[in-house]
Amino acid sequence: MTPEISYALNKLLTDIARQHQMRESLTDAEMAGHSLSDAERLALRSGDIGRLYELGANPYLIRRVFRRRFTI
Amino acid sequence: MAEIVAAALTAHAPLITGKPEIGDPGQRDRLYAGFREARRRLLAARPDLLVMFVNDHLQNFAYNNLPAFCVGLAPTYDCPSEGGAKLMRITPRKVRGNPGWAMGLLEAGLEAGIDFAYSYEIESWDELAVPLSFLMPDDETPIVTVYTNCAAPPLPSPRRCRQVGAFVGDYVRSRPAGERVALIATGGISHWVGTPETGRINPEWDRRVLDHVVRGDVEPLTGLTWAEIERDGGNGGQEIRNWIALLGALPGRRGEVLAYEPVPEWITGCAVAWVQP
Image (cartoon, rainbow over all chains, first blue to last red; front, side, top):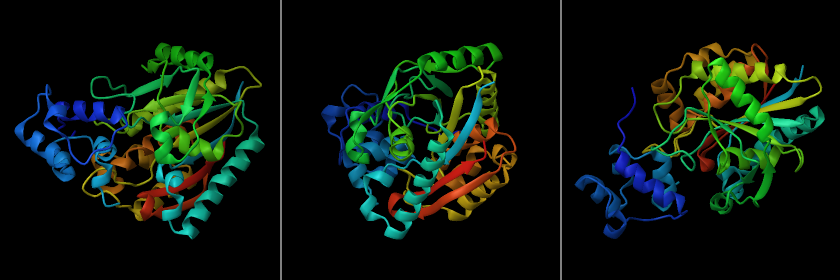
């Protein structure tokens, strides 16, 4: 059984990861033009790594982009 | 026929080289010693070519284009690419590919029903750079890469990974006599990366995996489901697909654990193992 993923979330995180940029959170400007749900926007805006995982972001991308949010 | 002269299985976690100082010195030294021993054996085997079973971490293949298996046709690999060098603290260098050899593998695969994707340009991360920083015999020995999707489910089944590995092994043996090929698989063992359980390691599961390697018994590993691996080995544990492919190329050959250290600071059950070629 494959976990559900969010294509929109992963598309945006892939773009940022490929610029080799690490973030605490994302701005509305960065999210503009992406078809994200309100819950996804909220999680990105607050850098909520646990919520992003629940919403179907790939954990490797979460780690790449929000590295500083991890305690280990 | 060509010969498989060496075979190694290793972890590839970026912090192994990126933050050597944060790990327990005893663990670090034992793991590094395992890598040195693998390098010594690899050098002694005098390979002409390294065939690497590895996986992407979404730096090449994203959700708009995700091959289950991909043969690298790149003439050179940046090890690591620019973005990863700082994190892994490895001075970037160019490692030669062997596009001609890789094309032969690709064509033979397609002919035999192994529908590989292919790529002429691969951005390499820890999957190549970390193990090669320890193992690379010299700057001349070229590599051929077989990338398996281990990071973005749904993933190819472990059973299929063994079949692909067996095909690669047969392909090597179909090559002209005199060619000396080493097989290297990287990744695993247990680690949780980017999930709410990030940092967890499961040494008990790691030892079970290593036990199968030692006995040359890949069958129990090929029977594992994605969910079982995710539960016991974490999302990073899915990378044992690369190991299973290598073991598929050398059926029944026994392994030897050169080092195993579950290093919490590197968030990975770190292993170096040798398989009798």
